[in-house]
Figure 1: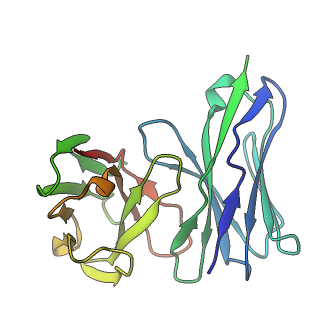
Figure 2: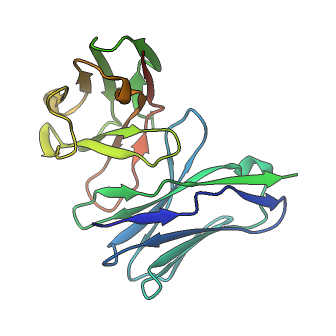
Length: 111
Length: 113
């Protein structure tokens, strides 16, 4: 079965540094990968989508990469701020547009 | 645009009781999803609607859970009877058809005691 794996340990980063989160998947490459942010008590918020034929996608301070050889996506937040603290979820989207989710990585940005 | 509306935000019920959740998706979004999220885990799909038809309900415990989407807009998810393990956050999401991001509601936190 298809799986999405994210680091279950919280990631602590100093304010101003770049935070990098990892998403690994098994079996065949998904058509798309999506990244979401989730704050406590709220639903996930869509951030970025990257297609399998794209190496990189950017949005403001966010950057996502997709390496089909390593079966991995990296999510970067540059110039991190305490307001970036949240849980970040990776999800694979297959050709029927359904999402299979990772468990998320909690990011803590320390001032 | 208005977001996905869900109600109630919180619900506490005793086991074997019934409960219903309501969702109003973003106008024009043909696809609607119900997810169950347990603390520390990613969302688990329960059911997916395309307009008012069911696309996938393979992970819906049909002996106790039911869902409907009348007229392809609002949707309700019902649990009857509830079990302790149903305690979770129930999320509704909607999307346009295709490779678009989902828009989620704030969810309903259900506690079964």
